[in-house]
Amino acid sequence: MAIEKITERVTSVGAQDWHRRLFDELIPLPDGTSYNAYLVKGSSATALIDTVDPTKQKELLSNLNRLGVDRIDYVISHHGEQDHSGAIPAVLEAFPEAQVVTNAKCKTMLKELLLLPDEKFKVISNEASLSLGDLTLQFFDMPWVHWPETMVTLLKEEEILFSCDFFGSHLASSSLFEKIDETVISSAKRYFAEIMMPFSSTIRNHLKKVRELSPRMIAPSHGPVHKDPSVIVGQYEDWTSDVKKPVVLVPFVSMHGSTRAMVEHLVDALSERHVKVKPFDLTVADIGELAINLVDSAVLVLGVPTVLGGPHPVALHAATLVNALRPTIPYVTMIGSYGWGGNTEGVIKESLKNLKTELLTPVMIKGHPEEPAFDQLDKLADEIASKCKQLDN
Ligand code: FEO
Image: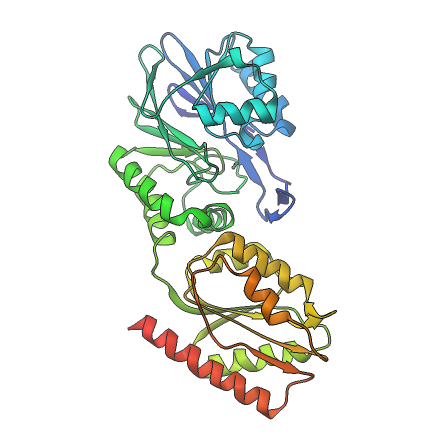
């Protein structure tokens, strides 16, 4: 990644990962990502804020070399996950005088994940400050954005909040000063949906603290910096709220067309009732798109056929992900076809047990749907339309 000045004394030295297409071997990255690391030069000490994924450590070291950095006093580690911490061992090898500054929980993680020795750490407590001479770093624990140890750092004199994953987006770009437009907000929402959504209620409290700190810039460790923090903070306030849109999501899979026929009937029935509906064929859908829509949609209808006595594994996988992401979705149900029996309904209900939701009556039918099944789907569409109307009022 190109070295980029953020301010006179803060320089971006991290790496773009233009071609990465999967994170955690699970999350699609349609626009790549970046691992932002920031060099902060005070009059008496220099700090490196986070590092990069180990696959990009050569770029980080090369950037530091090109800048002529001959000493790093502190490596601030906000988060143990290796896309930010993974190059710490390489940095410590190149700059043996550096101390790793972090909280006690993160220290334990870094020791376990990176096998770093005890003497390399300087442990700080919540709201502690660290002087770099004419600059001051202040640390704030913000657990569960998105691991238990996560923290952020305020560069007090310049009012820059380094937020690591918080407010980040998986978006590779040629400048960290990318205009914060629809594309960036959409990437940030995808990022929120995929890793932050399970912790929405905790994040709501952190947002109050961020408002109180009132930074003039937020510099995350993925994606562009936010020169007007109120935009991304406002978006996070919306995404973590319990206000839902009257939108129905229908992720489905179908083996021989019966469940698909049910899905198509329901989608048409909802459309005719002026209810916004979004079907997702799980065999080709970007699961991240489904996650984004789970942030603020009101209804989920899983289309799930029965195979070998239970739910089709592709639909079960989707249910497991939804359960892990814990969206606050008010209404959930399922529709699908079976050949002769099985416990699809029971397994799916169990797999969604984290959700605090009202379960509408499922429509599970034998064989290909005919009029009685379509009547049931029409009744379900009526019920959903009525729920959505209430949300609109
Ligand atoms: Fe970007 Fe949770 O690491």
